[in-house]
Length: 575
Image (cartoon, rainbow, N blue to C red):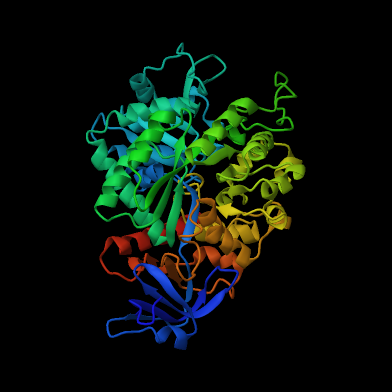
């Protein structure tokens, strides 16, 4: 800052929490050229005002750094918000059938009905031909594709399977399953990479995919801003997203830092992967959109017994293998070789591992490459639901970041489904967030949107980091209460920690001089309220690079409609 520098914007009159350990609170901030030029007292910052300086005079509201979402699926989330049939994870089968019927009445006779999210407990029930027939009847002859709350599985109807060219004798695709009943008849439930076959069939029916994808990604970014999110790691960035984001960047419509993650192998979304995708992504690198991570999927999900566990799954039937633990999708040698690529190409690694055996496999492979090459690329383990206690300290020792999704760990339909498959003692010790922090790990939170919930709402996730309870008081219970965080720790998990995990520590995540002027104004002080009401927090304004990109009070605008959508989402979570 030169002697004659003048602020373009000064924020004053609020309570400014910086999330900067060196200076947690301030009275005012000054902004120039898209960056924070000063953080200090009112008198210090007001001294930087000039004739054209804009003053944002608050009335005691809380100011926070723009939130960082360390794990979201922008294409799926934006597409769902912009185009698709909304289903709540708490909806019953009958409600889903009614919603499908009503939605189909607005479509042509051959148009796809695409929607979600179907709750895990419903997915547990529908592997039968009677529910397939009911879905067929509701669709009125139209093809249907519904996504579950893990986004790993799909529920399709007979017309969709006909278009997919899937019959009772069709072999399962590698890495996926067309679920059948006891007689061998198809049920319409698709597990893991069988979902990609359905997604490809639905994609093929879109007349102008580029235009549609651009709207989906624009919707995703505006939705993020409406919840106060100004940086995000897309957890699996396919070719269509790179093209759409590049088009939005050229038009000046990218209003968040976007870090992409390119799947190394076939994924549940259709499209090219591996080296071909790396080249496409690198060609679309821009100021705000960066292809900096490779996505590795080490296992599946516990609800379908595809997580790789150290201890056997719950045995339900006499023909179950009592020693079944699931199996990882990579060998240690394969994973070490893949992580070597991260060192060679300068990529980070985002590694999906829901089971404790998969987590250990990742830590073992990272230890191998760290020992050989030293500390270099950022490695994240996504979900960290189950971790063997002996492995917790290894996260800090190996500089591996636990990427956690707090939307999944409070009592809910997902946890109900998990409890049917995973031993009680393992479930009760799940999501060891406090232990990770106490061991020196950098805990980064992400929404996993649109998994689990129909929005990337960080306030629900932040609350449950603290309470470990469902925000809906009607849903009783608490999950592993010893792992509760305090407010400052929870805010760090949604601000500076995921920014660091994305490689953006020198760019955003705190209100600090020299960082991007990404900050939000909210309607309540999180440090002074009952933690059980944090999920009711509303963002009043969101600033990205010093520019207001969301204003809750703006009348008759898309921002206003987003505010309404945020209210409706919050209401649905508590109903």
